[in-house]
Image 1 (tube, rainbow, N blue to C red):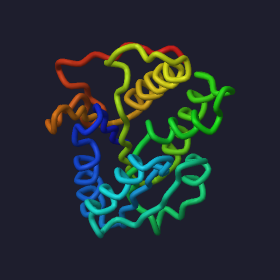
Image 2 (cartoon, helix red, strand yellow):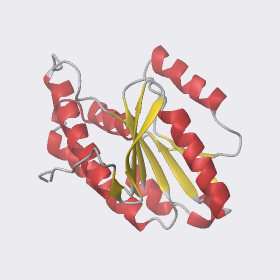
Image 3 (cartoon, rainbow, N blue to C red):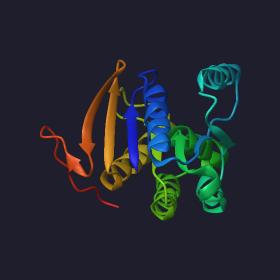
Length: 193
């Protein structure tokens, strides 16, 4: 798995698309874009439209805003090949929204861990886009803090499992991990489950 992580509008999706297309071309298999966004308001509707316009025609498209691990399990890998999941943070955000007041860090974390297990089973490379949400101010609302904390833990576990991790900042890609090896400037701290 290749994890592409960064802040909002950092270039994550464009970078991940290039990685997925190049990987599929090298392996001579199809490439599938798994969109997790759902238009809950006009801003998200516009964002989805921009992504659709920019997306390369080579991508097959699956829209899985919910039940992502179950939908991945049902995919025919020969038909779908390399997967690009855009994005983990949106998927967990939708789950948090759907759960409402019953949402908990444990529920969101478990959903992330179920997804990791399904990605491990998938026979072709998977590129996962996610957002780093823990570097800003502490969110005002408890639900946002629960989401931030769960996503931070899930992102750490995805990074630990990934063979490649790329950080995108202001359109610049920084390789944190390649072929399972950390960049000389990086060190992994064990994350509690």
